[in-house]
Length: 166
Image (cartoon, rainbow, N blue to C red; front, top):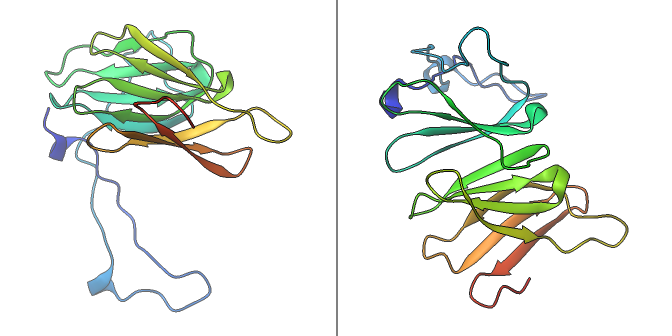
């Protein structure tokens, strides 16, 4: 499987409350292929994020099923990764092919190695009235900072990866 064969969705862009964008400026495409769970297994329910590693393996946060689904670049069967997640929402793959997960229901970030083993569990600082609820994240290319979207507290958390301070 190659990245350019993954999934293209047809759509046209229009401006809410304004004139439509002329056809020559719109984007249209078609579905080339779809990745899905084989029959007889629990299908994905509310997938919320997708990430790609350097080998072109595709990771999908399967939010309502509390798991990550890994689709093998070679076309093999999907692998279910379920390291005690609760509503995984955001995904990020770093330069070392480690998978970072915004584990929304557990109020933390989970870092997995390339085999799906837990490498780190990072607890997020609570907001004023409620715990953090991470919904997306990214790391700078040099790995020095991590940015985490805290949806319920309406903020962006920034963590220095060297000092581990928020």
